[in-house]
Length: 135
Image (cartoon, rainbow, N blue to C red; front, side, top):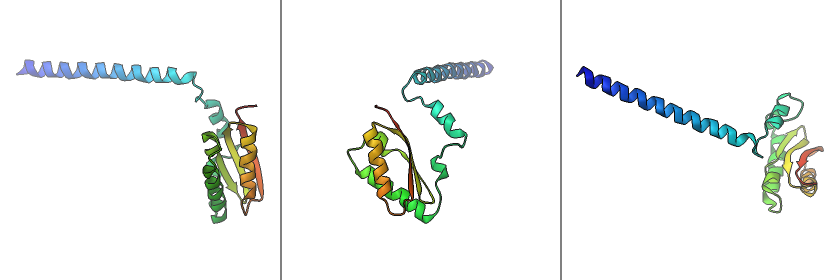
């Protein structure tokens, strides 16, 4: 009986050790795959931590600002000529001042997004901080 218990304990311990090694290998592989990826944007994220730039968390909670942001987002998503990046830019409204942030495919997209925001009722000013991926 004691031998069986030892054998079961040994099998369980060995299995756990093997599984832990596999998980560590998979995690390390994922880290190496993303290090050189075009999706790696750590520097941009660090830039946003210093509170010098607006993030979606800075969105005002007033009814008017929320409505402005929602209407701009709806107009942007409806425009199928815009790239996926352009349709997903950050739109932050504070007291009628709209800030646009994020990557877009071209200067033309940046201008188009700015014009969409400027046309919305209640918008006082548009701060275009969009980043063009193409010259």
